[in-house]
Image (tube, rainbow, N blue to C red; front, side, top):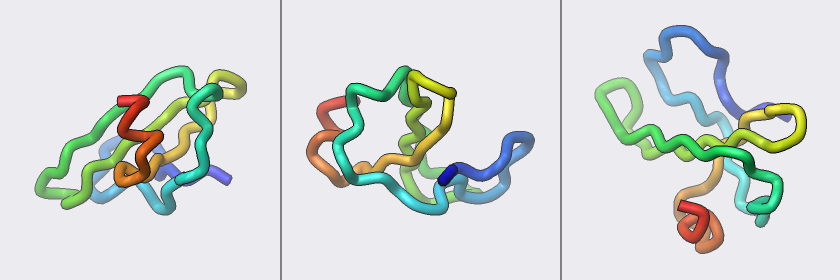
Length: 68
């Protein structure tokens, strides 16, 4: 399922759950949202190649660090 909140003005964390399984070959783009006043977490949001689904990645998993 989708683990990113809806679009629009986000005044909270977007990532509800984080993927930790290696899905690197399915990723088209990666966006990093740094911690701010609305969310104290670093959020890494990947857009998948097929279908454009957005998935949050666990920043503490080694394969995610390599993608960045």
